[in-house]
Length: 132
Image 1: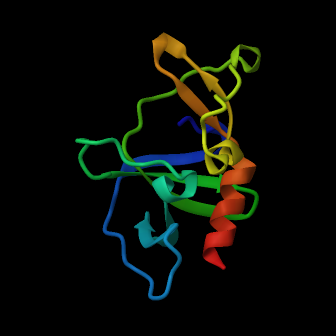
Image 2: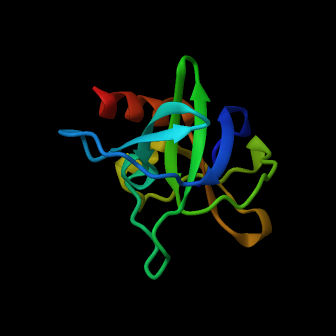
């Protein structure tokens, strides 16, 4: 999955995640981000994607900002920045589940690797629903 760079504040190693009682599965807990307690979400749960088999447990986070929200998302890896041309996006396959279709606007294939472009608005709606 690819996130819009305009919303990314930081990508870093995942600090200790402190759990919150009676939380929804999408909410992983809270983390300390540069001295600020920050709500932390599971990107796998938010995007309804299964972890890659044989891949180590997620060890990174990405801190995202959107409107007045600042959250951390647990991710598997951060590859870097890739410039997407909006006209080059392919349509989503019909086989994708509706939960994934809600969050992904198109598929890009830079260097032959398929990357789903995440709809930031939809992602933050999922975060807000999970935080209620």
